[in-house]
Length: 280
Image (cartoon, rainbow, N blue to C red; front, side, top):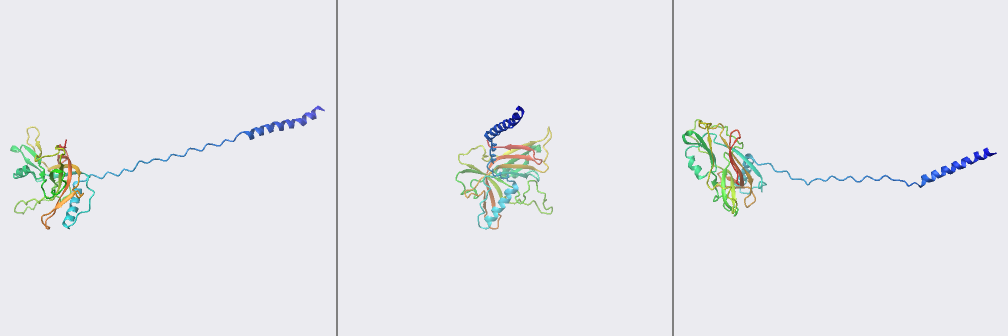
C-alpha cells in the first residue's frame, strides 16, 4: 500500500519545486543594457585665410600698368589689395657690359639703378646701387605726413616682365648708341619720422667689389648680375599702393609703389649671393 502513495506525492513535490524556481525567476529584476554615450562631435579649427603669394617683378609691373592706364584715362584705379603684400623683385643689370664713364657721376648723385664698372687697371669689378632721393618728388609730395624720407629704386625695362637679360639686340645699322628710355616704374622706400635710421642710405651706395682668383684679374660677367629687392608694399594716403604722374598726356605715366625694403642683395647670373644688406 505504501508504493502507490509515494507515487502520487512525487508530482506534488516536483510541482512545488518548479513553482519556487518559477517564482524566483519572476522576482529577478530585468537588467537593461546602458545606452552608449553620444559620440563627441569633432571640433574644427577656425579657417585661416590663405597667405597671398609673394609679388614678383612681373606682378608689380602689371599692377603699375593698370595704375598708369587709369591715371591716363583721368580716373583713379580701383582700390587695390596690394598694400601689406610681400614682394621679391629680381632683375638683371649690366647685361651689355660695364657702365660708361659718365655713369660714375650719376651713381654718386643717386639714380636708383644698379650697374657694374671696372676698377683700377681692370683688375676688379665694382657693383653699385645708390637709391634716388625722392622725398621732394611730385610723385611723393602731398603724401603721408609721417614720411620723413623717401628713397627710390627703379624697375628697369618695365616693358619686359622677365627677370633675366634681354635677348633683343640693337640695330647694327644705327648711327650710334640709342639713349635709354626714361624710367617709368619704381619702388619708393618710405621712412617714417622718428623711425629707425638703420635702413636708410642717405645718399650712400650699396657697393660690392668682385675680385679675381688669386692674382688673376676679375673676369667680366656672362649674363650680367642680379639685383634683389625684398620687402612689403605699404600705401599712399588714398589707400592705394601705386601713385602715378605725367607731365604730358602724350607721355607714359611714371608710377611708383610705396614700400618698405627689408633686403637688398647682389647675385651673379646663376643666383649665388655676392652681398646683401638688411636693416638692423
